[in-house]
Length: 378
Image 1 (tube, rainbow, N blue to C red):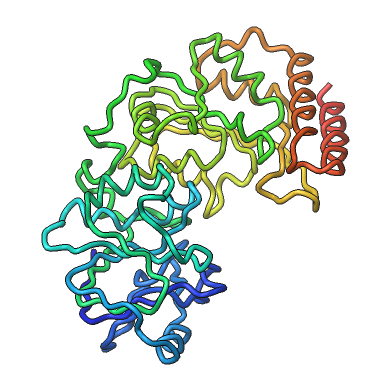
Image 2 (image 1 turned 135 degrees about the vertical axis):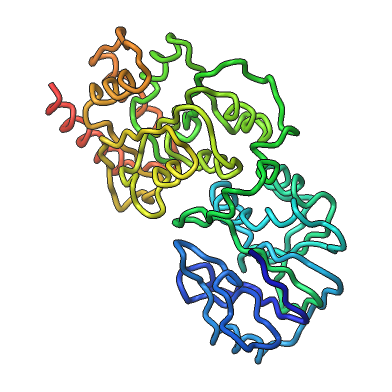
């Protein structure tokens, strides 16, 4: 589950790295090569290594070693700072540190070339909340130049974006996962039925009108949560104690990476439609939850004027979502009214009109699309 290399090179990211299979320079390059370099010595997605060995060798040949690290260090792979990518791609070698901390000097990350100088104390709070649980005072070095390490431990990632969890990773003790830790405790919310909302990201990809349904469910005892209002510890506690969680598709779902497995019923309300693809959050949810269902009867509003991840989506027919929720929650949403739902959609469009991200042309496209879809519902 891990390898050890002596007097080994750690190659930084260069411009154009982090772009996909077999096209990256970064990673661990052994000083003595007498067998194929393991794929996990570089970043991996979907079971494939990003490493290009020829690019690594060329970089080492053309550059001097600028940093030498004495002692024993642990390689933690690439550092991707955006919330979802950090949790899905930068934490799955940390398991090693819950097993072994003796005689370790520190840990190594490789950041993007666009983040060459990083100070651990100034990292986002969600990053430090996670890393502090595992690193516990060890030195943290972000590699931006060719580096040589006296002794380097390279843990295999237990999970990767677009790939299944390793069997051995799922058998690790629960205290290897921050979400399972007894150290995480909070009575911030004493409710068992939770909705994880993207209401504060209405202009960055969301289902129009979905708040209408959340208001109806609040009347049935659900609590709507905006996760950005809570610390990582509080969010994990809320999830750990919940019997039912409804997720608006988004980065917050990657909090489940911090659990070995999650109890309760988890419903995913898609905003992109592709919920069964290799890299989809729907596929990920099925790996950590034994009880889940996905609603994906949606229509994306596409436009060249707005980036895909910021594009809004429409519910094909609101009665489909009503029926989905009633079926899986065993409730009767008796207060549902089609006209009231449509009003909620148009109120969302008004809010989008004030956004700096949403263009006028996109609003026109969305309005026409919405009118067309709802005309077919009547």
